[in-house]
Length: 362
Image (tube, helix red, strand yellow):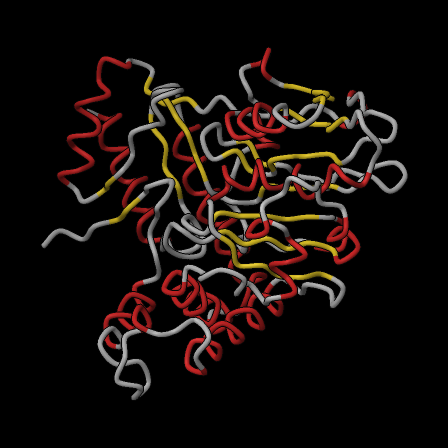
């Protein structure tokens, strides 16, 4: 069988060791006689899984003690609605939310927040085709905004922040880190809220992580559903309603695997190496193009285009024949995209680079 490397943007590749362990424990978790999927979320078996996952994630990201870690449902898109429902109560009406528009996902966030509050797009790179993060000194922030929302890695457009925005006063910084969480070191204390869908660097779809500073748990609107009220979720240790138990279990295996690999710092070095290898191949001549300014190129999601786009289908067919899967770009932007998350080994990136060179040479 041809070695397969899965470059999907999400749901995405998982560490082989994690899949093997999950397979071995599928029918009987640690002698309990039950699969994790069959366990009560309030039973001692699953509670131990949950507490270990929470502790390992807190260690991996060095999450300060005054932050809560929530395991929620609804996905990243769901959190785009849950965030305003939880934070708009911290300012008087009419509330304004600031955004920096750097691509497709921050665009979705803007539309969702506009259902609940006035939205100020403090800066945007849309006119430039989402090829960079707007320079910080160009941002037009609202005095007394409820919060500032940024997407620190745009999965579709391949734009990644290379700085942490400094904000005036006590305005919380909210960051969607869905597609690069755990891929690089982060100073959690600089953010009010960090959230991430799990299906890229953490585990299967259906789980969303929220890391929220405790003082921000008190500002939910009255209309916020109880199951989405961060304070309620925190008080019940993510068990107010039945959590996505199997997704939490897989996430916990991934966290343990990352710790065994040297933690986030070690993964960051590997990700830098993988990204350099791939971008160097794309930049070697003008057969391929990546449109993002080099200083803002994502280490996780690498969109690229063939100079002659009539060759797209031929390129994808040849890649599939070599076991290089899920390279077609998002339908909204076209072209190609290689997502090289933590679980993508450097051997996979090298195999893609070899194919890029071969195809261009032909």
